[in-house]
Length: 103
Image (tube, rainbow, N blue to C red; front, side):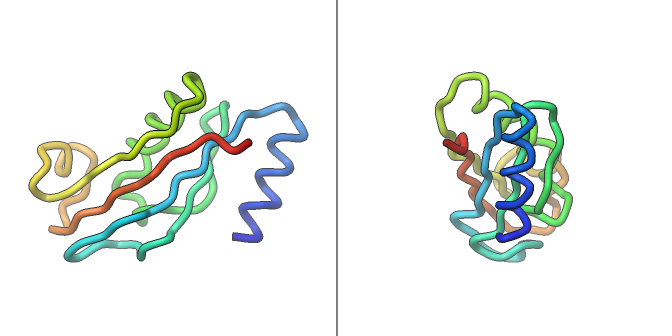
């Protein structure tokens, strides 16, 4: 998390807005553990990981929406969800990711 804090500070110093995505629930086989974090800035750059790559693109898109609206959002991806295959979560697990703007 320390590396992410340094990056948040750098991005904010240059004027970027930043969103924090955190894995808040997992089930079954998942690529990253509970508490994994990723940050996304208003330019679309990111650091960290919430899924080892399989849903990062979808989370980045949702983070952009969170940055525009200022409202946090809970995202759910899983094998029972039709978006699981669309975003690449084919491991059979389930993750919930909470995305919030960094104040």
